Length: 130
Image (cartoon, rainbow, N blue to C red; front, side, top):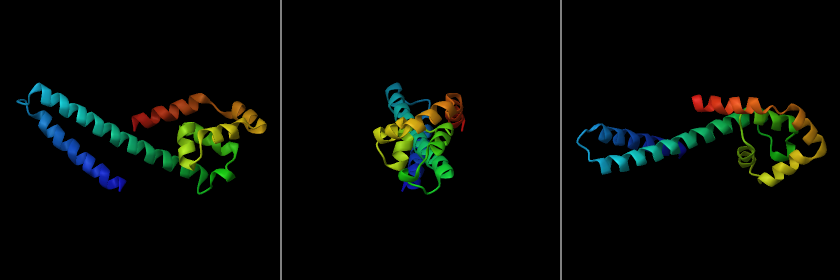
């Protein structure tokens, strides 16, 4: 279904662009079409981001569920560029449950020693370049 939505989205984007190319289009109509185009592009980008996030998470943790998760994999997910909210959504757990997982004494010390924010930031920036 997501693929179908994206193709309809792309078709509408092409249609809007063809209208915007027309030089005789009134400014008010152009402004409305430009806003709709921006909304469609943002929707498309969000869908791609969700797909990318799921692929990255599956590559790191495989088919494991949250109960079998360990702090090493959690740090790898963070280094891959996933936010804590995205990880929580992927595993269908609340963010507070995930925060409690990180707050466990052994997990917290490992996380603080091994999590490098710059790697997370670079991975997020690489996503925006794709």
